[in-house]
Figure 1 (cartoon, helix red, strand yellow):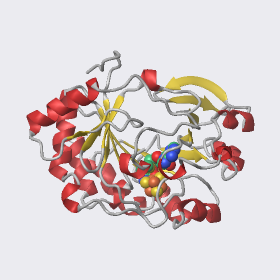
Figure 2 (cartoon, rainbow, N blue to C red; figure 1 turned 90 degrees about the vertical axis):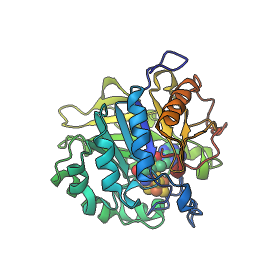
Figure 3 (cartoon, rainbow, N blue to C red; figure 1 turned 180 degrees about the vertical axis):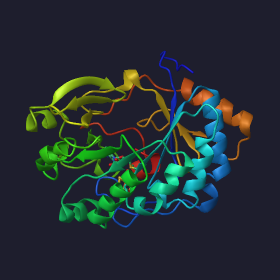
Figure 4 (spheres, rainbow, N blue to C red; figure 1 turned 120 degrees about the vertical axis):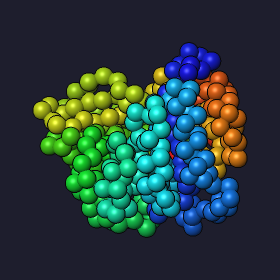
Length: 315
Ligand code: SAM
Ligand code: SF4
């Protein structure tokens, strides 16, 4: 289905929980969040119904995210049901990787097509500092388990944090030399926990090209501009929501864990679908697509209009 600005909307991101096993400094408050009451969280049936309604308006790709999707009870069942919805060609998950060692094989078997794994540093101490509680080794083992389970074309999400991990840009790019992965550098967006951080933390994707001048431009793919080191198996993607708004090519809507459809990540407009039957959910999906704004007005000094943290919206 097309939105009011002629953009084809074929991608739904579903947050299945706002809880997380990590406390990344830019995303989660140190002491976590007050848990959304169980009755407010979408049930497995609600999620499946939303996926069916989305498919009926032309959504072909669904991403399961969070919070940390793998801490949601019944995550494998959720994936199996969503993957089986007619019309859904691709089911992806964005995860911090902590529970991948446990779940990778089951997720593959449930029909998950691809994984994005978030890893902002390759240094154990820094990883602990960024995530407050995480253990890098666990995530590295999770990445191995994903490979073993047969996942290919995995993407590694690296949020650029000025003065914290920009010195690791070359090392991250090197990971693509011998592996068919995409390292995606994402510009930090000033919302939630990092909305009022020092401006020096917000560096642009151009820092990657300065640090690794050998990268060759291979063009746009979705929201990323893709580059490759000469002869490398994998690629490097730059996702620049701040320095290069991709709103004109936006193809997605979002669903929060408490059942609110969000036409735009950075707008606080929300449409509640919890408790609706299929027909009403379908109508709400259409309403969300038609309500998509032409773009957001966020800059590094003008925070997002969304009042939610990223762990609630799903990134
Ligand atoms: N817990 C999972 C994970 O970390 O991959 C899924 C949810 S997380 C909110 C999704 C993605 O959003 C992660 O790659 C995370 O690094 C990114 N993210 C969170 N806050 C962000 C921010 N303020 N700006 C840019 N990316 C952000
Ligand atoms: Fe959790 Fe992902 Fe947010 Fe980190 S970025 S706190 S892993 S939801």
